Image (cartoon, rainbow, N blue to C red; front, side):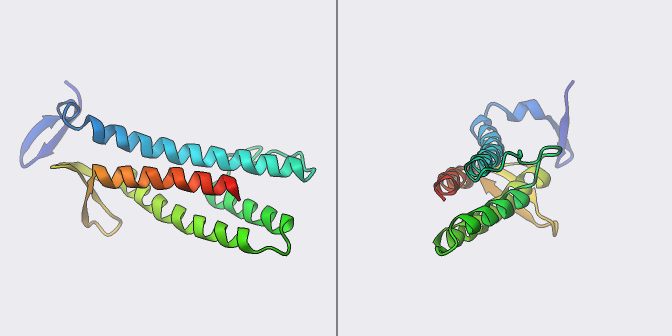
Length: 155
């Protein structure tokens, strides 16, 4: 039988959407994976920086640290490393601003998915407003995440 969505008083199985929306569904998965890879890269970078500074603790030994905690730790370590050069801290602030924007977009998709729509799907934001998400928007955010990851590793 499978899960079904009710739309305009008719039901349609979720699996019925897969063939025509395969690229869109794949892009949603790629967005989630790109975010996770960014988190893991940041954890690795912090671990390498700690090692280079002589600190052997692992990042988040008991629980996985949040992105905010990782960014705070990175900012602190870069500030200690580059005491006279604030350009790296400025770059981190810009990266963090971009990450927050993408995180809001990611949360909208993950938490606010409403239904498939022509050329994409609709989501409901925190104020219950409908927003249309198209494939090109997902692709742009995935590209932004990849750019952010390379900028972050260069700091």
